[in-house]
Image (cartoon, rainbow, N blue to C red; front, side, top):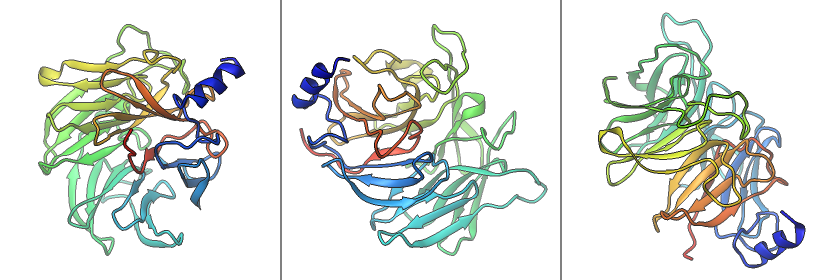
Length: 313
């Protein structure tokens, strides 16, 4: 895009950049291994807070107490306070009978104060109390075990079940609290052939994230499927955003999803290159109303990025 046109677009406020002088409409929490930190970017585009972390972060949450839940290695989940102190930690270890590698890609602080952790390699979900003790274990069904690909994002649902993204199998499954699969959706390639690569040229079914909507449908961040899919009754696609459907934006590895109070959806766009934003806010009619594009503080590997607040438009 010509420099003059970029300046005009930013001036009009259509695509506020995190590195520009124009204020953005959201504070952003994101992580990037290449830059070696987790950081909060304020509405002025400047770093408000940062924590050194060279691990490849796939999940983060800002807790109600202002602390951040994240991971600092393949097996450690930590809670970090604003003073950058680690105030809680859980370390995953091989379960009985397993001697292989473990990777944690997802976790969640639950309403009862326990923390849910998905352990790839161990092929299980555990709930851990404040003392780091496992108080619940849910087995996962994985046909082709791989500590790097068993799971990506996992969330506990309001009904007590667990919504699990199985990256290596291209499926999103709902498990009950005994490990029984009660619902399953298998991603497909659409009208494109499978191709290698982490960038926009790559295409597959390696799903990253999913959330359950209030209407009962499931919203899926397709990973290298390069799409956002809403799956309704009978596993039909009832709404979607395809790779090049948003004007001037190409989706690559679609990671995080957040539904804002106004119904807009914030989409995480990883490995898409410096010509594309890392976060995109869209309306239900697929109008882009805000983007976050900050390659000063982050690089091209912002798998975990989220907005921390929602300013009314």
